[in-house]
Length: 86
Image (tube, rainbow, N blue to C red; front, side):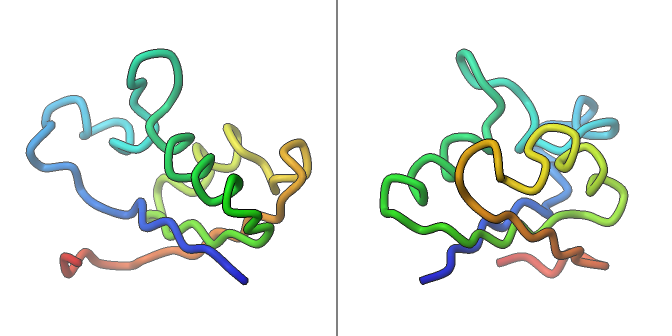
């Protein structure tokens, strides 16, 4: 089974902070928001996870999560060229 996390939004309701960083990388309590859906997928024993990101944010996600080996999973990054909503 594979999991998908859609993290490619523009975060327009959180501007101006989302002009420089993706909202999924913003801290919520003690960790970046991306860790919450990621941990749910890991608890469901899902080992292959595709994270859909904006082209300009791919490096930031990779710096934080890498390829997932440190968490015992495989993370693949896919870029979404334009936002069309859910």
